[in-house]
Length: 316
Image (cartoon, rainbow, N blue to C red):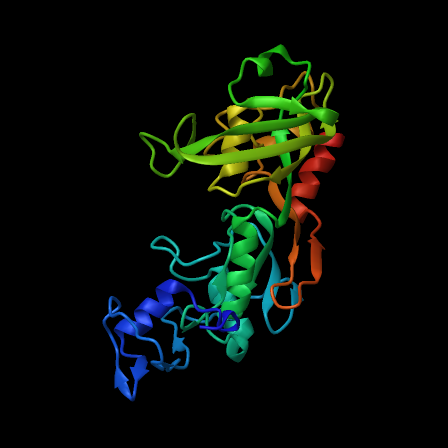
């Protein structure tokens, strides 16, 4: 098949089994059949099937859109893809309504191609493909870690290369410019299957880098970090920063019961952090090469109001 058709091996195998491959007008369904020189085959690509997911007219903050892809600034509280606990009201449901007939079909189904995800309570930039070709092109970049992703994170404490405690944390090191590097495997938690855990010598390889943009409190008790992903694993930033002892403010899963000190912060800052209802994490930067044209695309999204208010309180 020509590369321009952007058909995955799994989809081709499925089409073969369904009788979409013909030789002299007769279906060929045996994937192990050896082809002979000079034989000609025809592949009938059916129109994209309708998805069983409902389209819902949910307002979207669209940052960029063309015939191939769409970039959205997702609000905190919205799930990216339908799942047993969230069958509707997701980003995919909203995209089905917004994109409508412009979805040419991804994997043979008229649906947006989700290339990467951010957690329900993480805000920020997400890209979705409208076509098979765009989906394959974007997925290849995320798999090769060539896509740029930067997050803003408000954390407890301030990562410091001079902190003797951090020198004793396995997988934690510092690079030039005071950049915190956390490298480990990530795997499902042994007892809580909804959580991820840091492991060594097993799991999926994960690397997070973070630098301090601003620190707050006297003595410093919190910081605003810019986090960059070399890999993209489930809950990666959240579990890595918690492993380093700098869990996200508001994180109900990995943040523990840590609270800001009343000696370092004014009462309103302590209250703002204690009342922050989600992990303080925002996907602020997303960059990649356009999968059709090759043009470099880069997008930025400001912090949402709740996180901006938190930072203002910490500064106060």
